[in-house]
Image 1 (cartoon, one colour):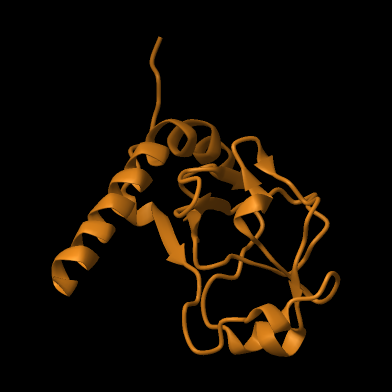
Image 2 (cartoon, rainbow, N blue to C red; image 1 turned 60 degrees about the vertical axis):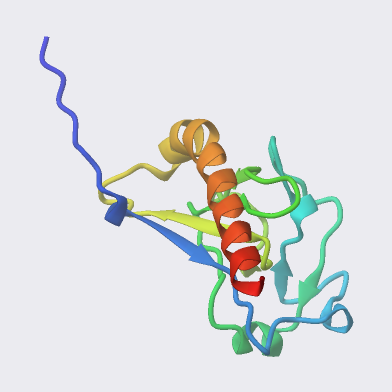
Amino acid sequence: MTINYKKFEYADVQFIDGDRGVNYPSKADFTKSGYCLFLNTGNVTSDGFDFSNLDFISKERDELLRKGKVDVYDIVLTTRGTVGNAAYVSDNIPYKHIRINSGMVIVRADQNKIDPYFCIHFSVLRYLKNNVLVMVLVQLSHSYLFRH
């Protein structure tokens, strides 16, 4: 029996940070309903999304932000707080406009090469959780070294 497989490269997967610029929303910008769901770390659990406590931002605030807009089939991964929680953005999530906060990263697979559903079940949950922890520790150590 011959098994056909394809090798994928890191270039086939993007890691997208959230916006941390001057237009990042403050507490006063959040509402309990609105145009764009702005994820908080409580929304991304070890079991996927939890939409029981939601924050929204206006269309105007959403359009000011440059990065961190979630697409269908993305994976949202936490990088602060509980590091490594992951959630898959399926096409049946009831929100069209979703953004990550500054304590998250979007993992976006090239769907022509990698099934994003495969990424969440294989790569993210087994491999990336440990690597995100390493990346956070490296980032913290660099921050500490450059300040002292």
